[in-house]
Image 1 (cartoon, each protein chain N blue to C red):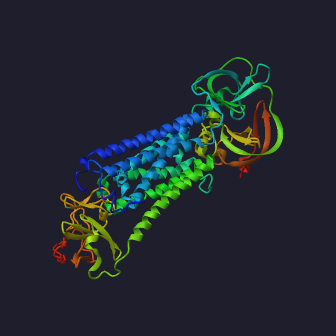
Image 2: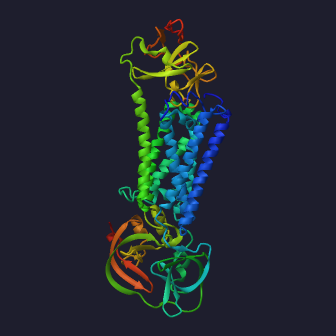
Image 3: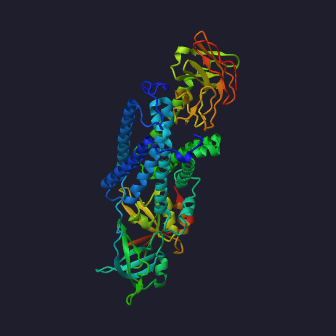
Length: 353
Length: 254
Ligand code: FES
C-alpha cells in the first residue's frame, strides 16, 4: 500500500511461491539438458542450455500472462496473482541468462564489440526468412527489464498509476516481439512442425483466455441505466451476502454495492492499486479488502485506512421496501456517504463529506 | 466448472498477505501446482526431443596436436601436409574465437612450419584452430606442394554460405538462420567463407569462395550468409580443396 515499502514482509506465501518458481525453473532446465544430451550426444552443451533457457523464459511468460485472465474467470486462481510480480521478475532473469549466453556464443571473441555486433550483424530488415530476429529478442528483454525494475509498488506510486499501468501493458508488446523472435529465429532452423504448432497453440491460448475473460465480464455487465439521473433499483437486499458485494453496471461504470452490519454502501468497483475488482472482495475488520493484493478501503468514504492514501469514488444509496437503490452519479473519490440502513429502510441520501 | 468470482471456494476468502490459506483453497492450489509442474516438465521433454539433430562435425576442444607442413594462401590460409603415400592434405587454418589465421601466418606464406592447434572436421574437410605463438618456420621443402591447382571449368552451384569454423563442428548447429549472426561475425573476423552444397542424397561438398582475381571475399559475402544462394563461377581444385571463383555481385539469392 502507500507506505512502508521497505518493510514488506517476506511472508510464508511469498517464500513458498519463490521456492516453487526456482524449483520449477531448475527442474525444467534439468530435464531439458539431461534429456537433450542423452538424445543428442553429438550436441554441444551451450546450444542445449541456450534453448533450455529460451524455452523456459517463453513458457514462464505464458504462465505470467495467463494468471490475470484466469483469476478474472475463476477466483481460485487468485493465490497465483498475489505474487505474480515474482514470476515476472523470474521470467526476465531467465530471459537475461538466455540473452547473455547468446551474446557470448554468437557475438563474443570476434572483431566487434558483442553489444554492437548484436545490433549490426544482421541487417536484412527487408527479408522475412532472414529478418534480424535477435534484435527482436533484445527489444523484448528491454521491456521486461523496465517492468521488472519498476514492478515494486514504490514505482506504481512514483510513476503515478496511469503511467505505471501503460508501462506494464507493454508486456503484450514484449510478448508479440518474442513470438516473432521465435518464429523468425529458431523456427527457421528447426523445421519440425511440432514447434510451429506449439507456438501457435501458445498464442491461441493467450489470446483466447484474454478474450474469454473480457467477454465473461462484459456479459455480466447489464447496464441498468443509460442516463445518470435519479436513484436506480439494483437488487433486493437479500441478494447481497453479508460482508460482500454485488457488482452492477450503472451508466457505463461498475459499482460495487456492499452489505455489512445492517448497512449498504456503494463504491466504484475499480481498485486504485491495479484495477482489481473490489466487488469481489470482502469486508474484513470493517474495511473492504481487494481480492487481488488486499488493499483496503473504508466502505463509507472509499478511503484507505490511515496512513494509506488511496481513494475510490463513492455512490449514494438507499433501501426502499427491501430493495437497494443507487444514485448512478459518482461522488468525488473519498467523499463520505452515510451508509443506507437496512432495518430502518431510510436512505443515506445525505452527502456528509 | 468455474466458481463465480464472488465465491472463491465455497465462501473462503484469502489474500496473499494472510499467514495461511483456508484449507480447501490450499488443497486446490497444491493440486494445480502439481499439475502445472507435471505439464511443464513433460513440455520441456517434448520440446527437447523434437529437435532435428546437431550434425556430426567434431571439434576436439581441449586437445592440441602438433602439425608440420607448408603454409599456402588460397587466398585463405591453409596448411598443406605431405601425405605418407605422396600428395598432400590441405587443412584450413583459423585463429582463436571468431578470428582468421592470416595474422598468425602472413609472414610465413610459402614456407614450411610447425604449429600447434585443435582440429575441427566434418565430411572430409578439416580446419586447425592454430594456437597463437606456436607457428615456427622450419628448414625444408617450400612451395609448390603437389598436386597443383586444376581448373575444372564453369559451374552453377546452389547452397548456403557458411563460416567454415563453426560449421565444421565448433558450433552446433553451425549454419542456417539461428546461427546467422555468428557466421557474419566469424567471416568478418577472417574465417574462410565456404559454400555448402548438398546433393539430393544429403551428401555435403564444400567450396571456398574466392573472388575473380583470387582475392578473399570475407567482407563481400556478409549479407549473404545462411540463405539459399546460387553462384555461377570457375571451379578449381587443388589437392583435396575445392574453390569457386566468382564476382560476389553475381551471387544470387533464391
Ligand atoms: S488491485 Fe492490487 S489490491 Fe486491488
